Amino acid sequence: MRVAVLGAGYAGLTLAKALEDRLPDDEVVVVDDTGNHLVQHELHRVVRFPDLADGITLDLESVFDSATVREATVTDVDPDAGTATLDGGAETLDYDVGAVCLGATTNYYGLGGVSEHATPLKRLADAREIRAEFLAAAEAGTPEDPARVVVGGAGLSGVQVAGELAALAREQDAREAVEVLLLEQEDSVAPGFPANFQRALHDELTTRGVTVRTGTAVVSADATAVELADGEALPYEAFVWTGGIRGPGALDDERPVVRQDLRLDGETFVVGDAGAVVDADGEAVPASAQAAVRQARVVASSVERLVDHRRDGRGGFEPRLAGYRFDSPGWLVSVGDGAVAQVGPTVFTGKPAKALKTTVGAGYLSSVGAVEEAADLVREELGWPAGEDEPEDDLPAE
Image (cartoon, rainbow, N blue to C red; front, side, top):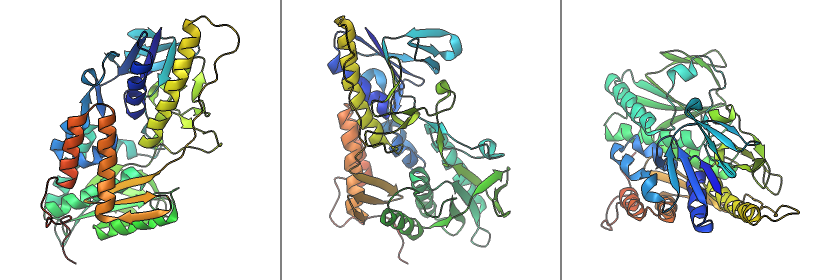
């Protein structure tokens, strides 16, 4: 039987690796438009450390043992027919069981000019463009007339890229020549997260040189300014947009709602950010890497049960599919050279938070067989091995 995993982000890679072990006698096909897995939660770091790109990009052929990798763009999925259209109709891939793991794309909400003038942060090319635009802005700015870099959207991605840009300003000795301005239409950064986590993130951002404005909605943009809902026009030299997500093109830009079994229709599942997941407790699940990985493990069990049922020609009722329940152990966010972590009700910052975030990232890389990349990440993030008197970061004395 053929099992198609469409997309190789966190959900797709975790699912396909699990299916290699669970279905050794079946064909697992992974379709991805780049042929690489990008460790997305480290992408913001490339803005400041371009050389990190190689360490967070994994060649899929080297990761899998038996799965077939197809480098192609999935442009349509027909769950009833069990088919995926590749490269705009150049080919149709038939499957017995499939999983849509294509992730989400940037949502501009129809705001005039934003998609044309802002840079998202989804690909390595985006990170490089943000870096180049920021450095040009820093070069043009002066302490008397600072350049402004606007980051639209203070979800976790916006927080991380803003923190990275503020750190880059310090490293370029341009802290007074460029303002990093983070805008959020809700009343706090990281909307939807616990209040103590939000406060810690806000404090970490401002401590590290980011100007934060909440309750501030963007309504449009042109090549030189962002217009706010109150009519104010904010001139900018660079504009980054992390304001939200929508579904992949193969699902008509929608994130279909799927329940605890993550089944879309027929023999097709949706895993990760491509779907709007409602878990076994009836709770909406936030889009995140940790949720995608855990969903993939649940779907791996369900796919195995379905394949065994079909292959053995069993009649009667279908097998009971596994159910997903969201139970986050906590949240980890880097802010420049610092980090904020929440474990249970406790929020902490500084070296413990940074070490925990690095450990989680390295653990993920190790889990998919990228042991060397995991070790490199630890060395890059924590400066290991390093002397005991090494400073925590490069924050100047206030």
